[in-house]
Amino acid sequence: MKNLPKLFLVEDDAIFAMLMKKSLNKIEYDHELTTFKNGLEILNHIKDNLENKENLPEIILLDLNMPVMAGWQFLEELVQIHDKLPKKPDVYVLSSSIFTDDIEKTKQFEIVTDYLVKPVSKDKLNEILGEFSA
Image (tube, rainbow, N blue to C red; front, side, top):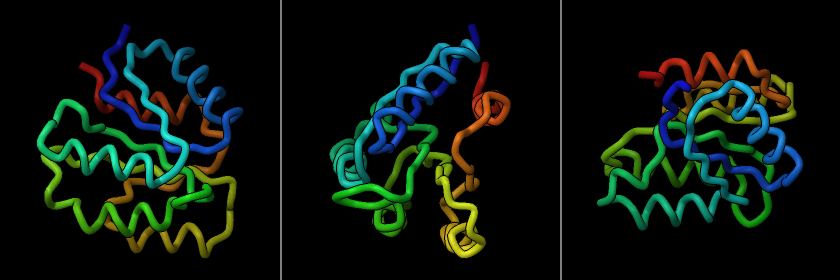
């Protein structure tokens, strides 16, 4: 089994979250996956753990359209605290949108590593996670 860094999935759709978990299991990475249902949940977790690097992720898979706090607002908030983070996560935006405007908007956030269109392929997950394998 390959080693996987701490991975946070921010997704309000339970079915998509389950599919992502199954995809991760199929690529046989030994991983610690934590899921959050909206941007506020993950933002609070990150803020509560600024002094505890072990509780912060290396990778965030972020949905854009969620209740309470959408992905866009989470990105704006994360930018504000990014310099305080002891570990800088790779942020991958997940969206079913293929609109150029959405893709271009994510490029305004330097903290975003890539924009991924749902569903995310097993090959793409392998590519992302393979960069962190030991």
